[in-house]
Length: 77
DNA sequence: AGTATTTGACCTCG
DNA sequence: CGAGGTCAAATACT
Image (cartoon, rainbow, N blue to C red):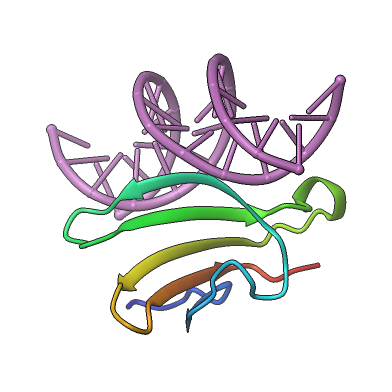
């Protein structure tokens, strides 16, 4: 947390695929020390609207309500 | 046929 | 050097 990430913020949601925009998944990587993989998403309209918004979805828990930590970068146009 | 999705490899940054 | 991140090609579905 060194924090000057003014274009990045964390949010916890149960439905990371329905947050108000469409996202195209462009990668998946297992992070060392993380119990679950991390999914890389990008705005589906990036080429149409220059929406440079990107998103990371990291599954935190798979319990009864499943919790996902979503990191957003930049804003939507 | 087109687009979205998947996995792997390659590249970059710390 | 390692981990993380991104891009590319192939496949599947619509």
